[in-house]
Image 1: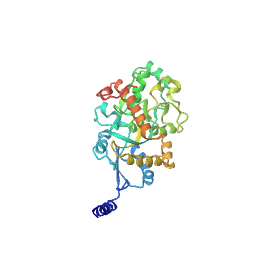
Image 2 (image 1 turned 120 degrees about the horizontal axis):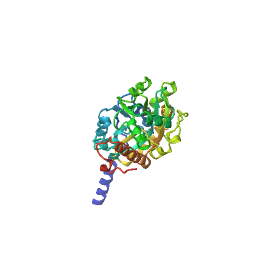
Image 3 (image 1 turned 135 degrees about the horizontal axis):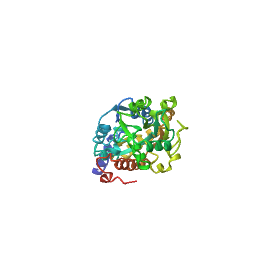
Image 4 (image 1 turned 45 degrees about the horizontal axis):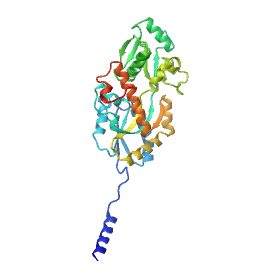
Length: 330
């Protein structure tokens, strides 16, 4: 009799236990590292509505700026690893440690999707006395410090591309600092500087409009958005060891987030990245679609960090050696 009562009680208890909620059971907070209207903001707001449909949940997006993206990163890394805070970021965190900007980076996160990467391009004012990369190097060698290069400060795309150039074909030029590639490209079009390393998406309209000209695309293959632009490896194959490289856009959650949550988010953003309007946006801006996750995304991030951290280290731009953080030299 006692056994029957215990069995009945146990059965009743099992039937009255609350069912485990399916993720997501509430709104997800999406933290964007950069301000409204920037490239990261534009990319994430374009892909996320498609991911929401695939996920069956709502993602409320918020721009959290400051600290070269570190404030947003720290907000997510200091939160719960439950998938209810997502970081929408770019490449900058992988340089935080060597640049002295923080002690956290994407190694403290699980990549949900590395969506796309930008392609660097070297552009010049239309009347610059050179049209190709070898001609530019020859002119610089013949006219030390006469050529003005635009710059946006340590760790930015222009400084990394310049570090690549100095590693393979050292140059003696005058650097002119600007607060972002937008003002620098405007200065280039006005003749205040001669050359600017930029991302293709920011320069493509000026190139097509004839207000600047292409010197070299820093990639291993031509761009469909600008097929006439010569790649740097077509004239200087030694750059191939450093490429492909470029700024990127990714979706991340704090490490330790449950595997099933990671799987659902990964599937959702994988589907979102296939949306026709999103791919059209990426193609139109000259970005390279990636749509990678898991081990493939982790391998990409590790290679990017290794290549870039040591490039800026060798260029004397870091506050600490990558070796101090176990970042291997490529």
